Amino acid sequence: MTAPLLELRDVSKTFRRSRTESVVAVSSVTLNIAAGETVALVGESGSGKSTLGRIALGLLAPDGGSVFVAGRPLQRLAAAEVRRLRAEMQPIFQDAAAALNPRRSARGHLLQALAVRGAATETEAIALLESVGLRPGHEYLNRLPHELSGGQRQRLTIARALAPQPRLIVADEPLSGADVSIRGQILNLLLDIKQQRAIAYLLITHDISVARAFADRVAVMMMGKIVETGPAERVLTQPEHAYTRRLLSAVPMLPGRGRGIPSALSNG
Amino acid sequence: MSRPPLLDIVDVSLSYRTRRRVVRALQSVSLSIAEGEAVGLVGESGSGKSTVARAVLGLTPAHVARIESGSIRVAGRDVTHLTEDGWVGVRGQPIAIVFQDPLSYLNPVMRVGRQIAESVERHTPDLPVDARVRELLEQVKLPVTSAVSYPHELSGGMRQRVLLAIAIACRPKLLIADEPTTALDVTTQAEILTLLKDLRRQLNMAMLLISHDLGIVASACERIYVMYAGRTIEWGRTANVFGAPAHPYTIGLMHAAQADRDKNGRFVTIAGEAPNLTGLQAGCPFAGRCSRALPHCSQLMPGAVGLQPEHTVRCWLYGAEQSAVTVGDGAPP
Image (tube, rainbow over all chains, first blue to last red; front, top):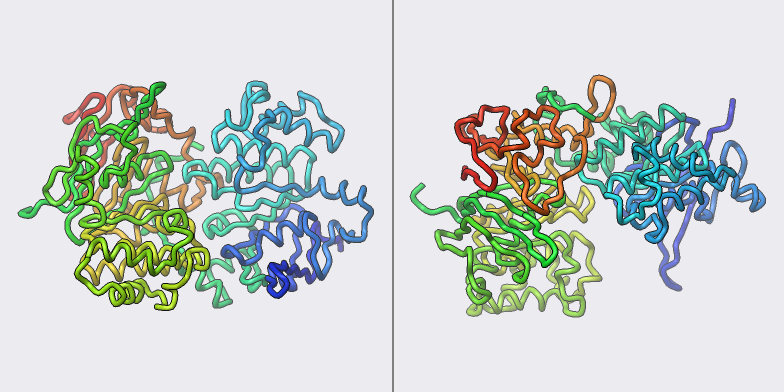
């Protein structure tokens, strides 16, 4: 049996706020992600989902437990080796404006990311821009972040994440900054990437409808622990844990969900 | 109706003007709320929903905002061009407002009990202040001991309750809630929505709930208005609008909100992006993104078409020929 792409084994992380006070952000979490699999991590703010995402990316070292990437323990590797592995795991964040350097053009962002695999050419940058729907790519090369719309900025951060040809993308609330009508466009882009490049996702979200529509598997997090995990459809329609039930019942639903809304509009 | 509506916005166009440009934030917006009624206003950012809330309370920045036409009436009284002094008779009573981000509306260095007390002293000076503050805290289901807390010591949900206590201290007939739960987690959001419902019933208070979240509005409001690019494009009884959405934008928004997929497994999207509101546009503002647009959609703004009792749309697909209107015109519901 091959090792999972990412394996979090019994990881914990405690943040100290002061001498006497500390917060257990992640507590003995075990989670595997197979190659090409999409796992949604859902939970409320403060549940530890983003901390877990940062641990998965190797941006935070856990206090306890271990992280394996393709079977290799992240903490025991030499720095150069970690850097190489890290290129295989790329983040996408919620706030694209904050994730981009305001004084750097799209070209600058992409060339820097492409340099990781020694492919920092303008042709590659243009290809990346076009692969995320910023067409024609050369028209976007010189744009600064403020010269892009919110949706376009998020596309640029996605292009940058794709530059090192990762096998896993950790997307931390990639849609919460976007308006409802833009959401579908970004979701379709993430879906294309998933299908064309066989990239695995750890999708961190508080949005149940996105988790249901997008993920193969769902892990529900509460107060630093994963309380329930399983196939998305099962967890989100027949939840077993009381907290999952409470979370689901709190989501305000539109009337007529699932019934035939006129399907006239579908021009994505 | 024998009594005038509590709030009656008729055909209001409002623009923000600077030396460089003009932003037409509202164009021919009509909206009314009767006593005790819960009305929702949905739309994406930049659609003008918050401008509506601010215009009703005279909170649009006076040096750039101008109401070009139309009128706003509060309980029958015209408030369209009130002076700053005149607004004192509207703000708090009969209309109070709570915002999305309570932290930026609360004084960070004053205990919340004192901040509620200020509202009590101002609006009900003949009541015993301490007793009234306690009563308000109980009404918003905060422990009485939280009066001595500073805003930063409270959670987001508790801060929103404080803001609600300040608002209902004025005994408003209409509460405007502008994205009141957007910053909150879903379980906290559910608690605040339940509280709003309870308060409305106890105090016989009408509500204008502004949100980008269709689900919230659907669960909390009897009637809704959908806004797009500064215009109300569809409105009516909530069950009618969400049960049989007519405007292509409303339909798209509902699909997008539920992350629906089409036959090919693609997420349903609305192509393009919301239009820039600077300068004059002719026609329907959605025409450029609409998959069903007709040749004249980008030329003329359609008038209001009644689809069924209490369901109206402004869209050429529903035979608006009779009420064709040119730029800037509109029709009240």
